[in-house]
Length: 189
Image (cartoon, rainbow, N blue to C red; front, side):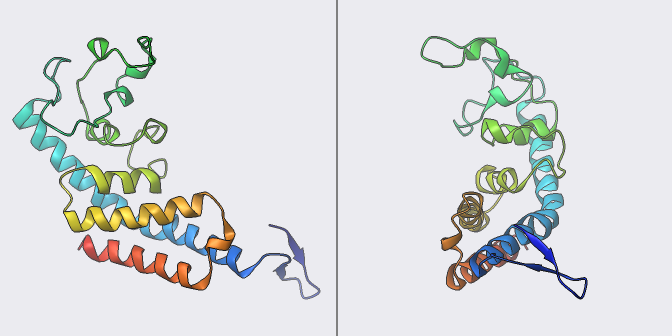
């Protein structure tokens, strides 16, 4: 986006459409308002679930053969303990027998629930971005079905934002996406 300095010293945007402006505002609202506000709550709930599973299932000391088998099958142990560095089997599959399945922190526990490209965070900070936060809200079973559904709606809006199709940011879609963020905030209360 280009800026030009006007005669009065202020800056004006030239060539930026209303759809593009709405896109920018949504991105700021999502990343700097919603995610910043919900991150501590998500961390607290993930940490409580981690502590509970450490006590009930010893996930902090589990072995490959004893990992959470009766838990969601989509847990990504490749995201922790450097497991993604092991050579893959023919066909590109992971060799789970070589994995270190000890989950030693609530951050590692969170990484089990996100896609590999999202698992680069080491704390619940700005590196744990909107994608990761929404994935956690949608997948960690400690969150209610209402929260999971609302998070999925916001995740879809976030994906539309990330793909920069500005024509998708007309007033109706823009308003709907803010309603979805509001619904998520209400579901978390």
